[in-house]
Picture (cartoon, rainbow, N blue to C red):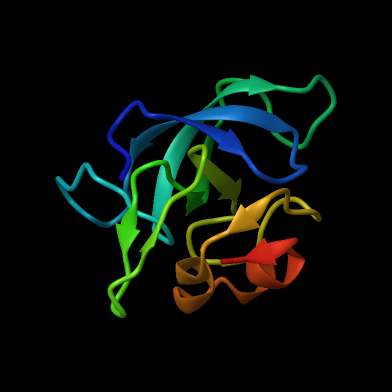
Length: 124
């Protein structure tokens, strides 16, 4: 569960290291994001010669959260950090990077991000 201005680590090799959540596209006044939802973010920290630069506005999908998420079967999933994967655009569900680092939640694949799920090391 993420709020506005939450800091997330980037779990791909697009060049960004940290982003800050600035909103949710098409959700009006909603300010809370869970695993598998698309968010708008601003790049806080980036490597010098990456695809994205510091201060750039990007779209991303949340792949890990520290706050536990309850599943339909009654189990809970929780991770050590808040992380996201940058997307090419809001409409296209393909990642900007070519590698995904760390585990991702199964809810990301259920939301239709099959390319991200196939690139990930582990899907929980």
